[in-house]
Image 1 (cartoon, rainbow, N blue to C red):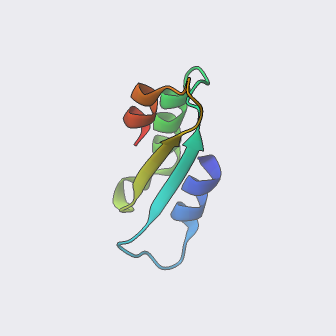
Image 2 (image 1 turned 135 degrees about the horizontal axis):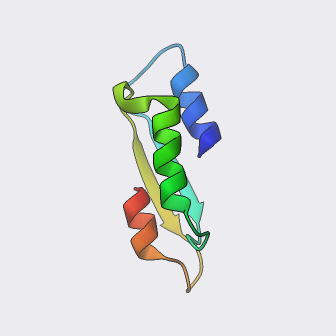
Length: 69
């Protein structure tokens, strides 16, 4: 996510169709907080984009994946 946020913040031309696709099992503790902190760090409030999540595995955390998206 940090690389995606860095890429969005450093792009020279912004467009309305910008998305991040996060593929994960969502089982890493504290992931939602790290994503929120990264959003603040990269100051992306003026950059329009969406985050789409896809949960891998039968034990993925759909609540976390939804919260991140």
